[in-house]
Image (cartoon, rainbow, N blue to C red):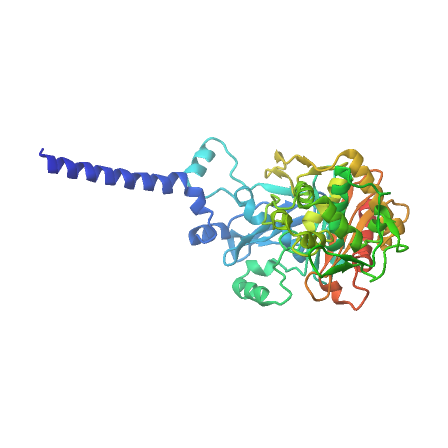
Length: 483
């Protein structure tokens, strides 16, 4: 064989080798990636008629189930008995509209494996169970439905967490949508209607929407000051009518446009209880962007939380605030460019409640087989220590006084010690978004909550966190403790 022929043969063999490599990659190594891609029509057709496992709450309430199609006995239809209240958590699976939530993330566990694929045939030959698996979630059904009903007619969110474990007890976004029509033949028209709805029912306001946290962010500022030793509850600050922002002609005033106390000095405890902006703008500047940014990051800002659906990253812009004390002062009251999700602020409350230790939030308790046997259990995971136990205890006392002798009085629950913090965000320029974060009972916290209502509830009432969000938190705490 002459040299040109050998070169040609070598090139052909190399080309076949590359081709074989690509075929092997796509057919073997990357098969799950393409098979599970929601744009794969063959997968959608294959999934649409398959039996899927149930999704149930911690108390056994069925959130998703499959039943035989009366018109096609070999096929199954998917149903969501609890409808809109659980849509942000459970999601949906649809031939036409795709999938979302737990239905999407746990599709491999939930779907039947009776596909007659090579892997399934091998599993069957080895005695594997091809029936669908099922999920039990951490959500408490009474708390979830109560939270959803309390937000009726408003745009907002509620997130409730068990502080010692990180279990999500409630995860509500309002308004929501009924996932059942998304399994029907006119699913695309229904979904388009949801997309066109100005109330944005498909938006996850609980964990994937960002808001200026307003004065609820003062918990982070106060915690940073206490943990660093810069201030204590009895530390005194000038009680100014307006706080002048450095290197700026702008000032920050209190919500009432008056002084916080007597006009002379005011303690950190009183300023926190009355939510005085002048003191916290001053305190943020004294802390500095690095110190405050480190505390915010410890609480979870500037990173995503791993849930079975997308979550937004809450924001504190440390780098941009290093050389801009005016912006830092505005950030100290939860305005300017500070943004947080209700999930994030519920985790702030939960970390303080749990002696300064943050647990990773999770929503699936276990995966079990068709016979009810547990196959996989999701255990609590310690995320990080945010505060020392001593600093957390000081913050707890300060937050309790917000409820007993401050702006959070309407969060009071008879016979229960509640710790909380109000927030009223003016960041949008329109009606304020109002907040309340809380945990209870103080002596042994079992629930931490964040309540957000967009645009002041549009109710014509006093649009503050203390007036609108705190009573919702009180009813949820009462419902939880009396369940």
